[in-house]
Amino acid sequence: MPQKFTRTLLALAAAPILLLCFASALQAAADPRDPYMHFFQPTFGDFQEELDDARADGKQGILIFFEMEECPFCHRMKQQVLNQPEVQDFYRERFAIFSVDVEGDVEIIDFQGNSLRQADFAFREFRVRATPVFQFFDLAGEPTVRFTGATRDAREFLQLGEFVADGHHEHMNFTRFKRETR
Image (cartoon, rainbow, N blue to C red; front, side):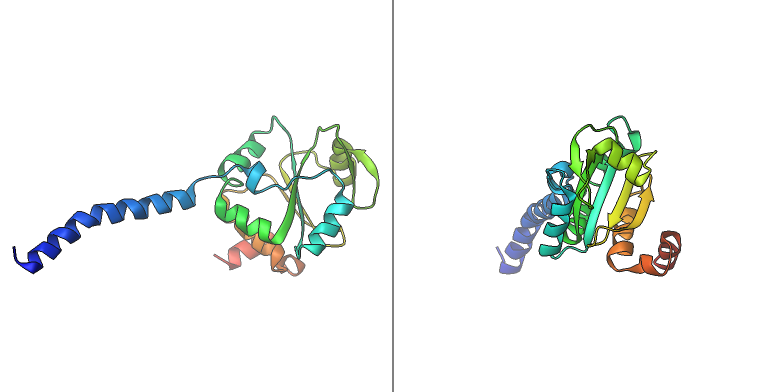
């Protein structure tokens, strides 16, 4: 067989294998990951200590996800947004991230050193009445940005993270930021 014809046959035979490898790599990159393993960080509920750790780790702040077990919007966020590797990597790089059950009886220590139940922390301290609520805090433990409800998709949630991490919240609201970054 002529050499050119042999190379063409080899290239045609290898093309499906290369395509399959490429598709597998893309699928692996898009595979959702458990948000409790890859988005939220474990905590003993001492937010003063978590704040110290966030500073030591070079984080930009803390993000608390106020959620409720029966909340369909919380569930949707965990199943469609917080499980995305791109979202997880972006947020974990910039923030210490914790989940708080708005109906929880677990004792926690707030940023001021007060001991209280998760439910009291959510309701009394932050007036959380609907879930989900994403509350961002600076490295002094002061609330900065609050987002109530589910985002439309992972892209909008990444925009929210960029809005906070890059300091845009200091001079505009999130709606304006989204409009200007379209």
